[in-house]
Image (cartoon, rainbow, N blue to C red; front, side, top):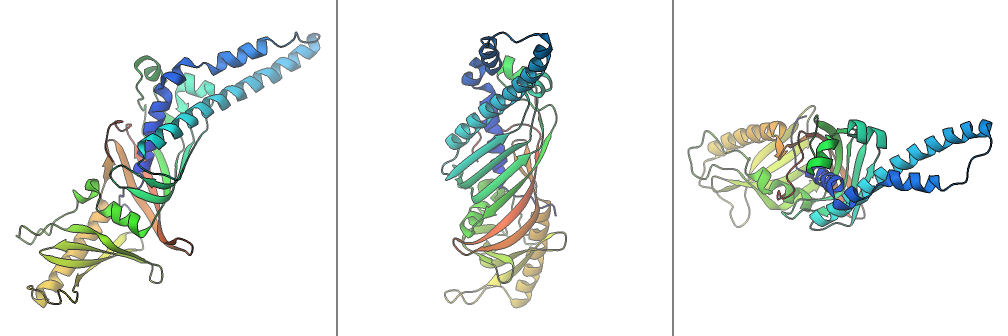
Length: 318
């Protein structure tokens, strides 16, 4: 299933944080390796020669482990701080970085990097209940970080994310400008109002029937859309929506049936083929599952695949 969604925009945020972490003056001015070495140099002289060999072996191992821990801790802490500053709202942010000092300094390798969060909302309204995003390996040009204060990927980074969206979150997603601007029109309808516009209100996650219901406007009419998981694709079924305040339509029943079929086909293709790009970060939908959380209401769990070709610009609005 190759429907592309926005929720892993949050991985892009994580990448922003890593930029801050590596290029922060606080990080540049600190030298964890020197600090550890200096502390060890103050230790008393070792016992006789046969003990010295064993002690040196242990010390080298401990130093390497300490260097790795300090490096990972610095990156993680700065990433969390930067992420909190970029989010409009959040109730939890965590970042876990695994790395070794030798791999980072000599090869520019870090990973895996895992970001976890709760109650996230971006400045433009993207939101989720829970998110966990993981990139196995990031290969960066570390010399560029040191000399130019710029983070450059040597090769694309691939990762995965799991995101939980409430009904409100899903409404925020389908009406976000980055997605709404890509929603298609009905090509066979030569009408200025043939553009399909998703509506934020009245989203329903139906746990009993395992689908999501939401609405759109097109050709001056309202259409109910049903999104569900197919065998290998996302499937959308469109039906004409009438209410007590607008029970009739100026469109004939034959025309309505034709529009329903056309809209169902177009929107299914849209969700399956859409590439959601955030300035070099590509997000693809892999799977979905409806889950009923008794305490806080139903959510849709979305599994996403992430491809980062370059880090997004820090000032980009999302």
